[in-house]
Length: 592
Image (tube, rainbow, N blue to C red; front, side, top):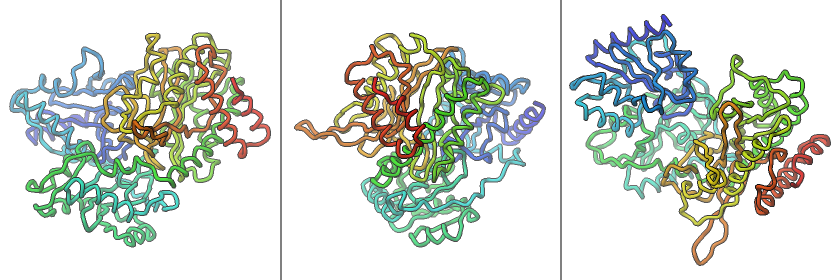
């Protein structure tokens, strides 16, 4: 902890030199990414806290780290003796960061942030809230002055994502984007979200964990498209490809110069939830601004026929890998030597046997018994439970294939389930099936369907705290929007071509967790005098553990859905399995 104290001391000296009374250090990057490169892990560097969610605030005499309940134990351990207080978000006694700063500081004080690390909307919100207490928010990158040995940005070369997988060329996508810009009466669009950029230019890389993206910025106007990227990352092939498609390649940091040189008569479009404040400040103040959801964000959520066909192939590969894994698990769990960590490694091994498997789409969540009740549990060699031939295992995992991205959760029993476990499992399954069977008119929002996944549980006073569904990218981010299925209101509607997760759950603290997750594709249903209706097609191919089902709780429609689903799983996966593997799967897919 001596090192952390020294870093805090250096930061406070920089604060004094700059005339600021506090500094906010988030766990984000300039691209609003879920996973970030080591170069931007400023919060980790100043606090020592490595959790995925958390923000630090440092004054001249105090420091706090705000994080949610997933990380209370980890936070307490990693912040011990650091002089940084763990601020447990969500507890009634814990103030949020801005109210805390408003109490600690006085009117006229300044709070510094690295404007690269905050979206335009987040920055504006903080600024307005601090102003109410007479405190000024200023853009000042203090960490740049004190973190002198930070890691370099990744120099990994990126590669061209072949149109045989993407289904649309860069030229086609730029035509679509420019049409959206015309509709918005905008001349220029500035982009910083890495998955949007990767999709638009048909490029992929490995600059961050799990998401196959490339660290870059982009600028598109009526005539030209520019990609701002470290030239060391370009191969001859990728440079030629971009050049042939009329894309101008410039240095990563040159985005600032290009923004400042935008003619003042031009209207600039940006997404306030994605573009960072530092880039926004470089846009000439005289330019008209068009604020709205990124057109690329919307376009990439609507998968084309080639992408959908690819995802279907990826689902077969993933289903084969999972089937082989569960056979292996069933054979080996009785020996008592498997842990949450070792089974995740084994599952990764089965996926690597599949052609065009590139990596995991997120860190596997393997939660045995009580660990399954921790929604975003992450096992480590120190904390991992040993699996026994009893109790319940929750396994949430996914793969990145050139053909598509997968995300699946299965809950299985490793022994003889109790009546309570079966009831909970079946209630979750009812919710999953009822959502999977939904038929709904166009322009329906995910929040309007969320009740279908929860009603069986709500009827008994039960619930779960997370969303029911998130959008999924095509060989891109496993979490993408704009659509979602959750209780929170989201104006984005569910549209044909969107891929979304269906993952209700149930969690009994210190006992077990249950979640059943498939990915679903929104497709047209019938058209009637009342308009066009849509439905979901389930894409994921893996058996659902029927040993945990209390059949008396399912209605005939739900039973039929499950039996039909299992018939499809068996039909699609059998050609890729050995005789014994197929026989094993036949038992798992037997009608109930």
